[in-house]
Length: 304
Ligand SMILES: C[S@@+](CC[C@H](N)C(=O)[O-])C[C@H]1O[C@@H](n2cnc3c(N)ncnc32)[C@H](O)[C@@H]1O
Image 1 (cartoon, helix red, strand yellow):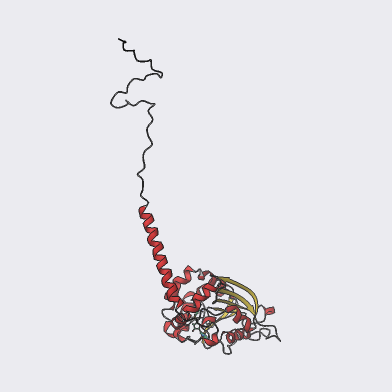
Image 2 (spheres, rainbow, N blue to C red):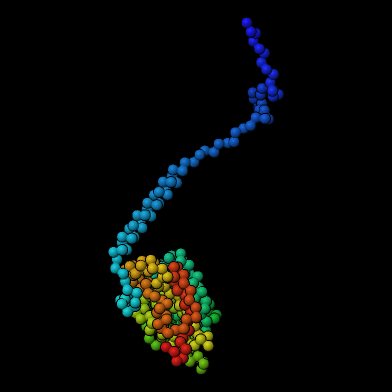
């Protein structure tokens, strides 16, 4: 009968078995890394699914609503004039538009516009005076603000008075009139060379609401000094985009927008400026090409 064999000698040195209690752990014992509780991805996937579903519903809703709306014409002669709505809008105008303007960065463009004002300045279609805060009055000899709506002009007067309390009535003159009609010369006696004309004419978001924007632009051209005397017309306007799909949306929503806000946002600003005969020195476009920055001068004498 075979005898039981003794166990083979251990290949590794044997360490004494750890004792129980504090300090009993072997220094060679490898501890497993602490396990992080695994986070479930389900809520994230659910939220993304709900968002995608909501977006597709909204897009479908927009598409089906838009496709049935009639396209508005983009020519001012075919668009009814709704400028009268500004009388009723005057007191709520700023509250209604400040946020969308802020998200579009318009305050920066307004600042750039008003900072170009110097000498005798005319601001046409001034509205509620949304550019008032950005004027540097030290550079302005006089500022004439014009609007056809008495209510809008009153808000603008208050805005200029609040932003520039030290400026007298002479320096900021409010004139309620059609900006396409012959404009008054600067209030302070003109020098012979300036022929009673303004150094700078500015206008923001005016082309959209004028009955005849070409007549307006020609009139602004007559009110400003010539290029060689440093005269400039600076426009910050909105209108048609560079993209057809954006224009499709603008054209379809234009009827309702014009009735509510008095403004036709689907006009071709570039074409209107060109038709006015003003000589364009600079054009920049923002927001898919719907926001226009235009610097122009009157046509050369003998021109259009
Ligand atoms: C869209 S608002 C813009 C106001 C302001 N310039 C701005 O940037 O917020 C257009 C303004 O043009 C004025 N307007 C419209 N037709 C005009 C006209 N024929 N003569 C003078 N102002 C006019 C309206 O009363 C209104 O205040």
